[in-house]
Image (cartoon, rainbow, N blue to C red; front, side):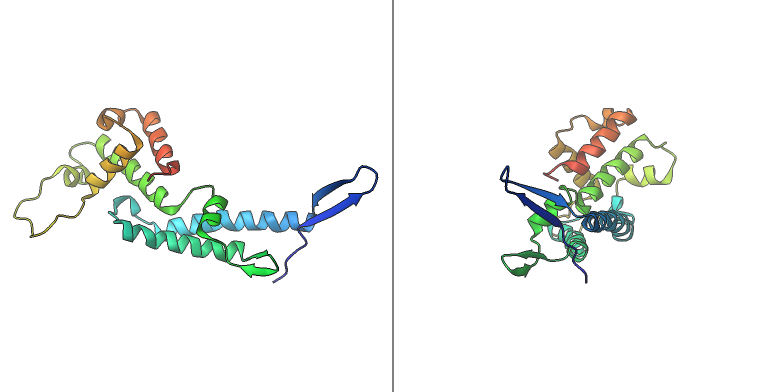
Length: 187
């Protein structure tokens, strides 16, 4: 793999200042990396998270897509050369490079978006019937798992959204809530 010279450092004696200019070859290399990141986000989200708005995930299950996403980013950004050694990038560095965005936040945002869509849906549509229907019969023994609705409502509670059923009718406000969910650090 070819690693371009990223910085050209020039020192002048008169004003004793050091200037740092980005090499033109490095600019194209950095632009290519940014394009790869954008492309990989599109591909990984569409492949890994297809239909994710209907998933329920435990904390352990949330780690699986995060690990996959970090693996892709490590492949794109490569190793870093520091203190005369090549080192792997840490999870924190990868999170800073992706500006705090990750696939789990995107999935939770999509889940909230789908919740709004279901709530606005007409009563005679099949997804709405399934969403509002109460199951008959007995539950199995043990602690019940979290349902989809409970997880979505918990995410809204973390965001500080009160009376979400009233906010659903205003699509602009609901889009703002979805955007907030995709950027929120606590989800």
